[in-house]
Length: 196
Image (cartoon, rainbow, N blue to C red; front, top):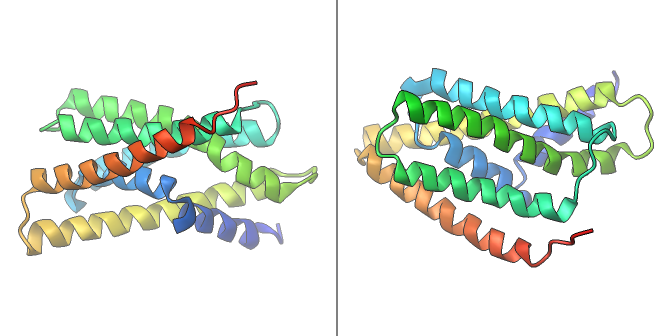
C-alpha cells in the first residue's frame, strides 16, 4: 500500500488535467445544470458515472476487456455532445428526464472508464498485483471529480444567486458552449479512428 498516495495523486491529476480536458467537460456538463440545493441529484449522477467507469476501468486493466483506443477517444466527446444536447432540449427536469440522466451517466461512465484505463495501464506496466494501485487510482479519479463538481456548483451559485442570471439562460450558455467544443473534438477524432 506504499504506492497508494502516488496512484491516488495520479488519479485526481489525470481527471483534472487541462490537457485532457474532455473528462472535465463531461463532468461539467453533467452537473452544470444543477444548483447546490440539488446536491442529492448530483450525488446520484456522480455515483452512476462512478459505477460505470469503475467497472470498465477494472475490466480493462486486468485484461478481461480489450478496446480500440482510437474508437474510445472518439466516443468520449460523443458522450459530451449527447449530454449537452439533452441539457439544451430539456427545459424542465421531470422524474423521467432525471431517470434518463442517471442511466446515461452510468452508460457513459462505462465509456469514460475505458479512456482512463489506457492511461492507468501505461503506468502499471507489467505489475502483477494491481488491485491496490487500481483502487488508489480510482479513488483519486473520484476525488478529482468531486473537485470539478464543487467548482461548477460554486460558479453556478455565484451566477444564479449573486449576479442573478436566469437558470435556463445559464444552462443554455454552458451546454451550448460545451456542445460546440465537443462537436469539434468528435470531428477531429473521427478522422483518427483505426478499425481493426
